[in-house]
Image (cartoon, rainbow, N blue to C red; front, side, top):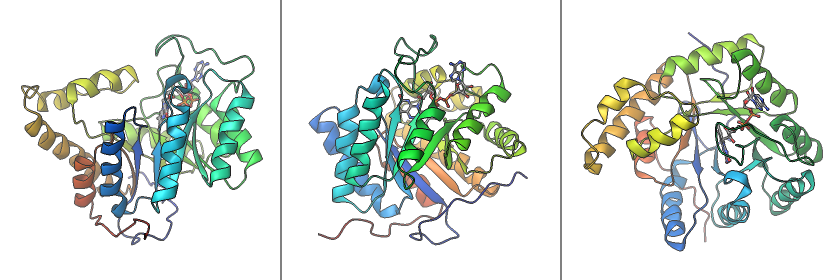
Length: 304
Ligand code: FAD
């Protein structure tokens, strides 16, 4: 069976239980902010390795991503990771964003190229004075801040723009050569895709952790649309499990938890010991799945 490089642990968790991280998106409204903080407070005691906050398409959430990250730093003991893309901005602007993060104490960036401003599926055009690739961004962050950890993306089904897996893994290799120390995968539902991809990556001699990105599908119909646009295959067996449940959110939730729990338990059985959860800012399913992985709350909130 494929060997998975064990992740670095931060000492907060017993070595035999899996390492987890959570992804959030920056809230748009006060109500969404309240809901996100309910989620963070519920999940924090599970002791994640880090929690990441996404960066909106085209840099649209720059300030909201920053303020969410800053609040996580101020109010919890969690380790935040800020997503950042190269889209639509000159290098100087991106460098300022990284400098601000470093100044407030952030030591982990998830560095991405980002999607074309003209929409997924159209040609990506880099800003003329911007970082031309994600690898350039990684190199710049690592050069200016050697104490900054940089994670990057990985695509078990290859990125839709990659002509083939070789080209796709060339890009991962370039990001690792530039200093990335962890890859987080795009969501996938067929574990074989992940293992086949991992085999290809390891055969290239890339040995950083390639952490599976797991998305519990709270709303199958909606999630199916956007994961498909991002290049993820939704297998027929998965669609069948949600058939007839469009108007039954309670049952959908139980099915979603069962499906995602099955996926992570199968990955764990084959030696995977690190998981990144796309939480969609909701705690319930991720909490239940973490519980099934043997993870129990441990009081990660900062003392008052
Ligand atoms: P890269 O890793 O730089 O490239 C991906 C692949 O595309 C490469 O393998 C390469 O082969 C191919 N490629 C790149 N450029 C070209 C080119 N010019 N011509 C041909 N092929 C090319 N998006 C956001 O906007 N905000 C986020 O916070 C965010 N977080 C993400 C987190 C994770 C873990 C993942 C997996 C994705 C995330 N995305 C996010 C989506 C991401 O921005 C898109 O998938 C984007 O299209 C590619 O960015 P990247 O850094 O993954 O690309």
